[in-house]
Amino acid sequence: MKKKSKKKSSKIVNIFIALVFLVGAGIFTYPTISDLWNQYRNALLVSKYNSSVENLSNDQYDKLWQDAEEYNTEHPTNVIVDAFSEEDDYVLSHPYDEVLDPNGDGLMGSIEIPKLDVVLAIYHGLGKDVLEKGVGHVEGTSLPIGGESTHAVLAGHRGLPSAKIFTDLDQMEEGDIFLIHVLDKTLAYKVDQIKTVLPEETSELDTIPGEDHVTLVTCTPYGVNSHRLLVRGIRTDYVEEETEEEPTMQKLAKIDPVKIMLVGLAVLIILIIIIYLVVRRKSRKKKNTEHKEEYKE
Image (cartoon, rainbow, N blue to C red):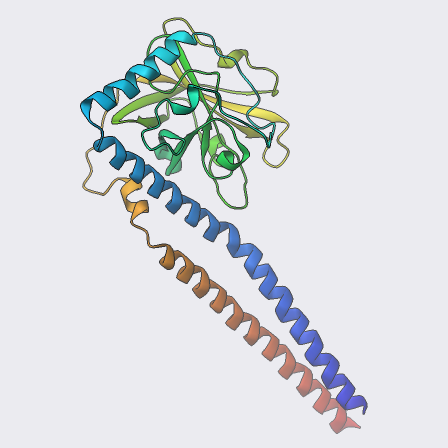
């Protein structure tokens, strides 16, 4: 009876250990798989945005650009709100909700940060749903179309379990370049200032007469989120890199989501096999020990 009881308890322990390992493996692989999925989704949205822009008539294109310029002219002073106040009932104002939106889906363009190897869709406003999947434009600041005396502010989360977004923004240094793609234009910005401030300290986000800035905002320190990291860029000449490789956006848009799932499944299966071998080895060792004890008796 004791032997049967021991075997039964041993099996339960082994099953428990296997389940713990499986849960751990799931937790370990989830961020990677989820971030790949978010990258794919962002690339798909950006690709769709670019296609819509290509299909615009000249009159439609001119109107979108003119409306954006008029908006900036009518809003010369930035009105700053904390991008991460987590308001559930965030509602876009009008006509802000329609500017630079050829698809009617809330996208106004995309941001590309070569150093971090990320391409992210830029959405209107700071809704919770927006900041969970991409970058939000801080309503009340200049639209990111460039021009004298403009200062656009773009916000993104760090450390989300489902997407990296601005997680690595602290790796940026002065002199690094990031690109804003809006309609069919590409605007280049060189990082000229990096500061850490409290949420209520917003003076660094004001427009500067005659200058053209874009500031990227995220929470800091990582996991604490008590302050705001401001990475400011000043407009510089855009020099297109000569490369035979496909642009990052196009490569990501062609990723098959099924492949992402298969990669995740393959990793999980490998982990299960490893767990099985470890548990089996321990079980054999235990049996050998029990046999030796029985032989001694």
